[in-house]
Amino acid sequence: MFRKNLHKRGSAGSARLDSLSSPRVVPKPPQVALHSADLAHDRDAPKRILIVEDERIVALDLRTTLERLGYDVVGMAASAEEALTNAASARPDLVLMDVRLRGSVDGIELASRMRDLGDVAVVFLTANADNETLERSLVTSPVGFLAKPFNERTLHTTIAVALTQRDAQARLRSDFALLRQESIIDPLTGLYNRRHLDAVLSRELEFAQRTQHEVALIMLDLDHFKSINDRFGHAAGDGVLRGVARVLRSRLRVYDTVCRYGGEEIVVVVPGTSLTIAKEVAEDLRVTIQDRKFDELDLQLGVTASLGVAAFPSIAPDADTLLRVADAALYRAKAGGRNRVAVGVPVEPSLRPQMHQA
Image (cartoon, rainbow, N blue to C red; front, top):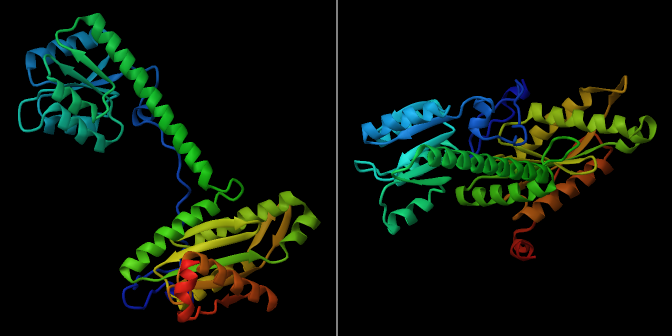
């Protein structure tokens, strides 16, 4: 069958086996993740605290005080290894950690390792730490310090302030992630946008050049799309665009990148793929779109697509040229009758340095 071996990358250095015989899903645009503790525990639930203290009497006294204040002590650890295990399993809201732990790993190094587990908030407990130790601790971005000895009120206030700071930092991270997502996602189709395409092309071409692989690019434009908007309205046209985006997601690999280039034009970056294989991929997309009916406003709407294909470095030496060659191929597909695939014309090797510098 044609589709069964469609994504067999047969050339040396780029052999990767893929199949279009079953749907493959492009990853959804990045979703905004909240702080792990916010996801795991209800806001009204007692805050979960892990104690990391190598003096058992101090740790037991601290646990008793914390439980009396209404906190949930999820564990007591006397060593770095025990603390990492407890933090990974219990997912505490806050870690109260002695700066000076016995053993080869002190509290500061342990806090650095805990950062690999996610957003772990740490309050350092210290009796007489020197300036050098305090300066080292700042690298781990603790949410507070608590000087020994301390009373119950100071402990409670320090924890409350630390948790407030942790929540504020989590909200800032969430807001930043949301802003970043909105900056690279097309709101209509959910595909990546042109800004993200520029970043992806730059990264993929740099990697391909280092590893002697190829990168293909497919430029797709929906045929007579304006007539859909004119006859049925822009709402129907928007629905068809979203439907085409879903089709592309279902037919492409997890590491192919699909971007809305503008209007009804879409660009697909296909890493590790020769020009020959990319043409077959484009043909599969063309046939799938042609055979699909889109349910919009109680209408069964059909659409076809014209596609242009190019590849780096066999056809084009850089990202700008790659886009221009694919666009020119798309224009030829349109001029040749639409609903077809056209392959880009190779750039003359003698012109490549000049085009690369332009």
